[in-house]
Amino acid sequence: MAASSLPALRVKPREERRVKGGHPWIYSNELLLDPAAKALPPGALVRLFDAHGGGLGIASFNPHSLIAARLWTEDTGASIDAAFLAARLRKALALRERFFAAPYYRLVHAEADGLPGFVVDRFDDVLVVQANTAGAEQLTLLLLQALQDVLQPRAVVLRNDTPVRRLEGLDEEIRLAAGSLEPQPHVEEGGLRFALDLLEGQKTGWYFDLAAARAQVAALAPGQDVLDCYCHTGAFALNAAKAGAKSVHGIDRSESGVALATQAAKANGLDRIARFEKADGFEALDRLGSAGTRFGVVITDPPNFVKSRKDLGAGSRAYRKLAKLAAPLVKPGGFWFVACCAHLLPGELFAKEVAIGLGQSGRAGRIVLSGGAGPDHPVHPHVPESAYLKWQVLQLD
Image 1: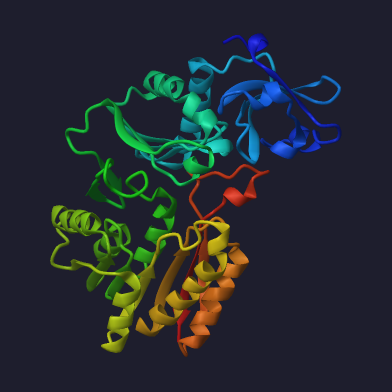
Image 2 (image 1 turned 45 degrees about the vertical axis):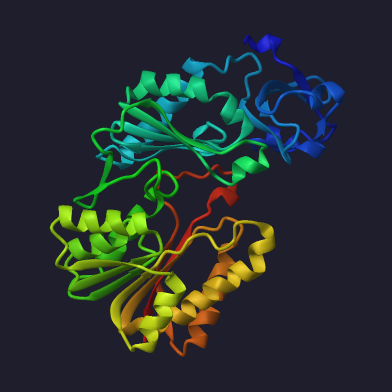
């Protein structure tokens, strides 16, 4: 569709300053919404203008969302087509190739890569795509065309099962959109190879955001007994094992995750060092503590405890409980890694709850490392809340 034929929306007087300053979102209360605008289908492309008729750009529009418009370009004459998306993909690809030698990374991270609502993870010649907004949903077929043009993948999986889709009025689905998943997709990290289940596994199949943290924790593992609670498919555990850990014990409540971790341990010749157990994380930590078991390195990378604002109180206290249970398992002088992937939980509150739980455990120590996601998860300067991940490494006395 030609840009000139797109519906036009106006921003209320004096409400255009944020978008003119570079913010990619326009909220519903900042727009002049007449009946025609409210009748537009969710995800429709629109031309945005200020109250005086000045062009602001082209955005995807969802009349049912608080974030009503998501800006794609400041050029009101641009065509948002496969060529436009391919240009954005090439830019994102060039950035990743500056940081990563091998083709395993998050290729697209939504607004920060100029592709609002889209996430794309790359596993060499297999791609996993998430369309998390109505606008992204409407452009998915064009994105698939652009991905084919830029990377010629052998397979593309759509993992449209994120909770945020419900906020956009979208159904959830998981399907193979193109190609074949035979042979089985895999990821390589730290000299290890992990088989992936991209249709049934968690998220997009792998947590690229903690790759750098896994390398730093692995460096603390030589000669140590290591516990990896919430181990998923064994990324932390097996990186520690390869680095020279004395033993590694992985725990996860997902039967398929434990199976894939066990498979990876055997495939990488680490099955004599690493073993994996299906169990609830809190229950396992409590059991190990009661038994007096101690480790030189304890890793806790739990699922999101704060999935909505109503969960903030109970969810933040869950990190306190995690600290109270995990800290006693660390030998004096040993290390504890703890991560939080809840974007609704501020970093300051996460750190506070960890500190309270540490005190309640009767242990003391110091934060020696902290961080967030890697460079394949860039953050838009005007959307700092998208920097969801925070983690700490503490040495405990």
